[in-house]
Length: 289
Image (cartoon, rainbow, N blue to C red; front, side, top):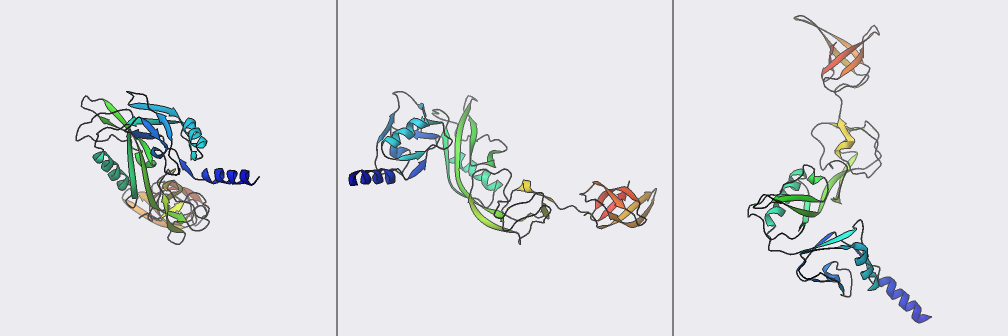
């Protein structure tokens, strides 16, 4: 009984450490070992043998996970269904990594990039010396993606990349109500691993005053799609109304019954309680329509 308990505890703690399997790896030698994939296993064992002459090889992620399990080590496959192995080449990817770095830093000036990995999709022996990556406009929306490089023949050679980085992002430091103005009193900077956000995360307060277009819970990362410019005319505010009649301009004061941004058509209420339509032409200034 005691021996069974010891054996159970050993297996439990042996499988406690759990690293995440990646979707792509490169190899020099055809024999792949556990240490080539993760560092969390105390023992080293063979995972698979790449067939002779193969420069690329694909295998079901569950098969790899089962091999680790049989050797007393746990590995998390996450959303990876298949793992791709590509033979290493003498490609110098320094310039491509620098290009990706520049693009991400341009989008997020305060980003701290720790590592960029680039994996060819298939065996690529060479690319032109001054090759530049062709990137999608939304390449900086998440920490992994695809780009291509044109080879000497004009053929597209595709690469996968992954980015390990952190970013200081504004978070709500209290419950936020809709239409509340974003300020330093209701937000604070926190560092987060950069993964994927639905919208561009903010690292600084915008130059133009913004308000929240939705309610937020405390400690929520703030992205641009949660915000909108503060209207230059607010509901209930007094506005200066211009009436043009040829070269003559007459002005009077009214009350805005709607909020509006520049050039919006809103309703105003005159001193006699009659309502009319007016176009927003400036801060608390409208033109009668």
